Structures are given as structure tokens and as C-alpha cells.
Image (spheres, rainbow, N blue to C red):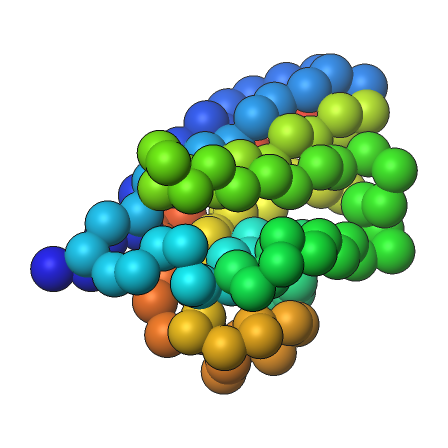
Length: 123
């Protein structure tokens, strides 16, 4: 059974940090690209960061560049999203997703989705 378990969300003040984790099982994790998406109330789900399974290349949305860092631990089957200098506009439910191919920013490229973890940044 394929599982993606997102965790690490919470309430933090602006300027603070959180580290999200996405624990994966049930598929060839090493070969998959993993992404973090987020969805704020009333808004479309948007890509935040992704990391390619083929070579570990990471990419970030402009809104989080320089503040967020994605990493992939194949031995643990886990992807992390370190979020620093958080802003109120980062408040959203964060989802991790896995793609057999390149992944990128298209939601439809992703085969598996986790359940989401809430991140709330207070001003």
C-alpha cells in the first residue's frame, strides 16, 4: 500500500521556523520526484518546492526562495521541507506528493498525495 505521511506543521510566529516531513512507503522512493504543495483557504493549490528523483535537483517557488530548503533522504524514505523566516502568507495546508516522472509544478504529474499538515504563521 502506498503511503505518504506529512507531519511537522503547527503554529509559529512570523520569522520563526518549522520543518515538515513526508514519510513515504509502498513504492520505489529513490526513483520518484517529490514535491510540496500548499493550499490556503479560498486559493488554488500551488507548488512550493520539488526535488527530482533522478538527480536530486531542487526547485522552489519564487515566494519561498531563500527561505525554504527541500531535502530527500532515500535511506529513510523521507523528504523534508525546512521553512525559515516564515511569513503570515505562508499559512496553508501543506501536502507532499510523489511523481514517477520529473514532477515539476503540475499537480497532475503527481501519482500519490499525502493527507496534508496545517501550517499557521501569526503576525
